[in-house]
Image (tube, rainbow, N blue to C red):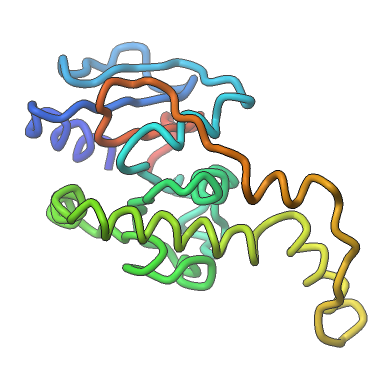
Length: 193
């Protein structure tokens, strides 16, 4: 998968890409249209995910084989309203609805098709993923679900902390990455994908 991603970036010379993560191989050669950030501080993740038109999610081999095991970064990107292009894996559709909340790429052509989609559609998909994440995949929503499973009854309402409203209405300030088309972050790039 990594070779396909690099090939795609070389092929789309007019686009700008950003790779981020600490564990990319030291000897990898990137084309001129690809910027590399070895580390993004956790408090800057939101700005990073809000900075590009698309965020690429490539699932580690072990997680993909196991299934039902999404990266926390997938939810972090979705909570920021990022339009995510992800590889396919067992269980993905239980977390996000393909083509409505997330774009699934099974081959390079699927990624190219996504990159050409109209801006309004792209934004709609990112916002749908954000809404689903805030409603179902936040720590608060997961606690409600856990309580309902334990008590074997419908989810209960939990008292709202003061920060809930702030989280939902907080302005997402993107990083300035000069027209980045696709940002791919990760700390496990050395794993086979």
